[in-house]
Length: 204
Image 1 (cartoon, rainbow, N blue to C red):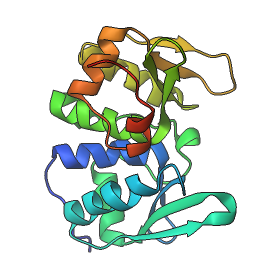
Image 2: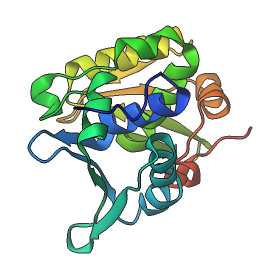
Image 3: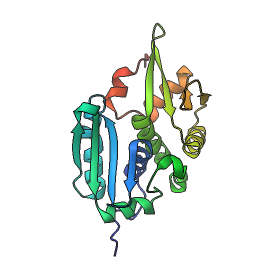
Image 4: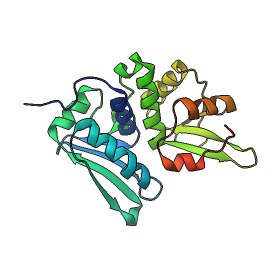
């Protein structure tokens, strides 16, 4: 018997789905939900944003633990009801790359959901790259998962963003390069990860 912890879509759920698609995973063997980040760069984001968001959204208490030796921080919860709630709303357990995951269809039904999901993806798997001497930053999203990259690009197009692709390294990347679109992202989608906010450069 499964008791779903959330029964309807919301902006908060869409953002948590984005966070999970970026740096999270579901383990079927112990019903574990886990989000991984850098223990220094992501520390404030984990303690001050992701954990309160998850605790409130699902009305259960998540745990945070660190592995300083490996510069890792984790948000973790083993809960069967939560596990199946997230599957109900489109997440897939196991290896995200092998499963070729994508942004769930329900998120495309509302632009508010899309913005929140994109924010979760960029705050976890994205990068804000300051351009020295130009007083502005690129916003990058990188993923080795084809379906996730394609659904990200589709979402950005729906929201009015033109993205470019770059594959000069091992992991393909999608980025926003035009100043007006970077400014639009900062004002409309925003960052919740303090590390990204600190790295963001642009006169507003």
